[in-house]
Every structure is written in C-alpha cells, then in structure tokens.
Length: 139
Image (cartoon, rainbow, N blue to C red):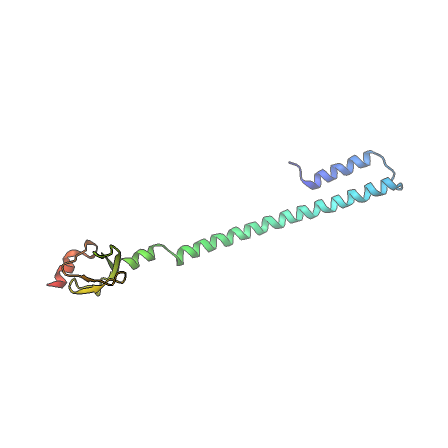
C-alpha cells in the first residue's frame, strides 16, 4: 500500500501534466488544494510515527505493570493464608467455618458465626493439619 505522501505526490504530477496555467483561477485553486493535500499528508505521516512511538511506550508500561501485578498480587499468597486455617462444616447450617490452626486444639466448642449454634470440636481432625500432630496436641 502506498503512503499518503506518495499518493499526493503522484496527484501533483498528474495536475502538472494537465498543464493548467497557475495564473488562471482554476490553476490557483488546484495549486492551493494540492499544497494543502501535501501538508495534510506530511501531518498524517508525522502522527503515524508519533502514534507508533507512543504505542511502544504504552506496551512497555503494560509489561512493567503486569510484572508488578504478578509480584504484588500473586495468587499464591491467598493459598498460603488459607493453609493457616482449618475448614469445618457446621452441622446445623452446612456453612464452612475457618478456624486458625494455631488456636484450634481439637477440644471444646465454638459458636457458628452464621447460625449462632454451638459446634463441638471434640475429636475433629483434618488431614490438612497433619492428623498425627493434632492428635498429639490433644493427648
């Protein structure tokens, strides 16, 4: 595909080939129009170059932002956080309740935050919490 400037240059050549006198009214109009087209073509070419540079800059910023998001909002952090909690299903309302493993002793009762009924923690073990370690805590 030809560039706009080359097309305008071709058009100017065609106009010169018409051999219209530049002193006539038609010649003056055609000459001014071709000059305006040439100016517009140069401006468009400059804007294309500027847009290309800006697009490269935006792509670089986008890559940097993606890298920062991966560093600061890593999904693995959520998994690490959940490893410190034990999920227990309330027998009354069937909602899952998460209890801090360090506080959990395997004995006693807790109040369900959803239905406000007491849940007995006696003999509740989770393989996620290394059952042997939990049993040893209770002994």
